[in-house]
Image (cartoon, rainbow, N blue to C red; front, top):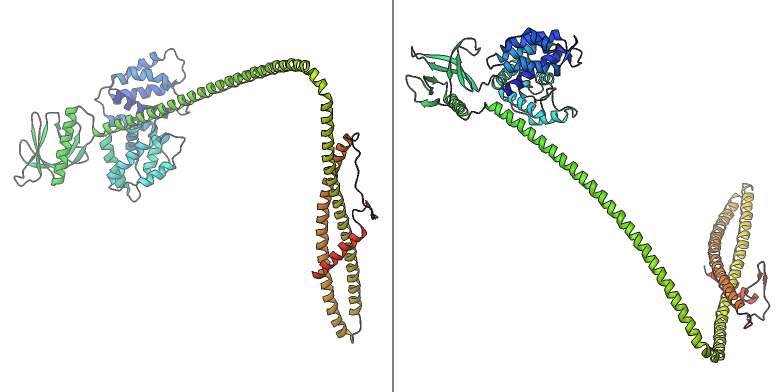
Length: 585
């Protein structure tokens, strides 16, 4: 009864929301009276016109919400429903209330009757939560059934592409979106309207009307024993047979129970593909059109009887229930996984906090230990200093007489040590002065060379200027001297190129001299610093030995920076060496 109530509520929900014109979630009492009366009529439940007013007598005259209408619906209608009403009529009444408001205005490849059947199938396959939606798995199941009914091949890649473009903000499609999906022909390309309509009708018969199998077969009569073609419809507990497939003229039923059985018969009386259905009080002889149909009907009836013995629902309902249970299980597993992840994350955060607290405690303990160690070392140092002081004092007292005796020898030893130190200092100072003198000589030489290079460069530039002026004057001479002047110009250009080459060579040498000058300058600074340090040391010991500075007996040259570090002969020797080097190059 609970499953029937859930199925009824889905259709009623569509009707209630259709009456909610302003989408406020409420419907007027007058509309609910009409809806309740229609529901009682189609569900064959006695209608109590006063019950609605009595149920809401404490409310004002305003509209009633869905939650407010549910107690009345359950108590006065759904609890009284028996399984003796026409489900198609019930669904069509609810469909009539909601179709005009919700059905798309876009042209569809299916008729309104087909749209009604898709709507009923939606209510069967949708989830048991509101607002009603059909999830992608059930959409795929329905489209597969329709494709198989149309005799086409299922395009899994096309559906996967559709799922990729599916709106992530929604969990599924509404009934009207499903109708539009089926009606726009996206998954039935190449099929005509009639084929699509027949496929929808076949799926509707299977899922909604519980038709397990149907088709034309020959039946042998009980009285006249003649064979007549009938349209047979197999349902979970009955086989009905009609004059034709329009189901208008019903000729009888074969009631099935767990004691029924089906047997194959040999061909006789000119009839082939015979089989026998044995029931409690009657036996039916049936002739199928071919062996394949015969085997399919025997298998279908046998499976139906087996399900009756097991008390199981029809295969499509059982499959739907398994799919729902699987989704619920997957959802529960996902929720459990999310819960475990949250617990792990919370535990991790707690662990992190605990580790942080332990780290802070360790840092505090280390800090306290460091302070205590520092205090211990300080106390130890103070005690050691005090002990050393006392020990030194005792040693001084003990060695006082020995020091007086050894005083003279100690003074002599100190004097000799100072003499040796001063001699070492004197030798190092001489080396430093020699380095300084050599550095000054090198600096003076580089300066001389640089000055001479600059003079030669100036003279070359002046000579080049003269040649250039002479060349300009020669160009302005008469036409008769042009050839001779041309030859002279060529010679002068060659000389000019040679002079330019020499000038570039002089420039290169000047740069090298500058680099040598910088090196010598650095050496001079180092020697000056060394000399200064030694002079300071000598000044410290000035009271012991008087420092004798070396000097040259030869006359010194005077430069712009003071006395030169080399003689005139040394300068001439350097100039001679430089000129020879230049000639060879």
